[in-house]
Image 1 (tube, one colour):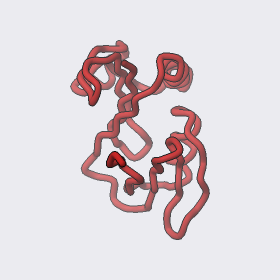
Image 2 (cartoon, rainbow, N blue to C red):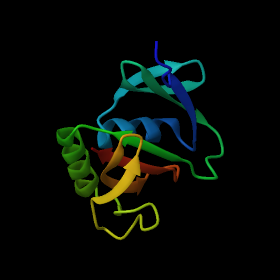
Image 3 (tube, rainbow, N blue to C red):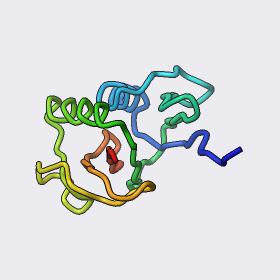
Image 4 (cartoon, rainbow, N blue to C red):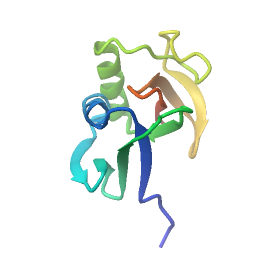
Length: 125
């Protein structure tokens, strides 16, 4: 069996705002509350577990998507009026997508922040 990431705990200022953002913008699924965590399901093998805590320093999370999922998420970012950019060093230049390396090589990417200030990246190969 290959080793895969099962879940990760993400500190957020507001759990409901995080769940709403990740389900609305990225199209992920609300997994409800599990103990102190607000859970969002990324796919069949990965969940994001949001816990209320100081979210700084900002962390970076990158999500690989199919070209269609990427296009839909990028449209939702634009429709929501979220600042975005074509590189992690120009998150609010309102350009993109850019090209950046990832686990599978170079791919199209867009960068933006979640409500707790974490740097998010959506990418497609």
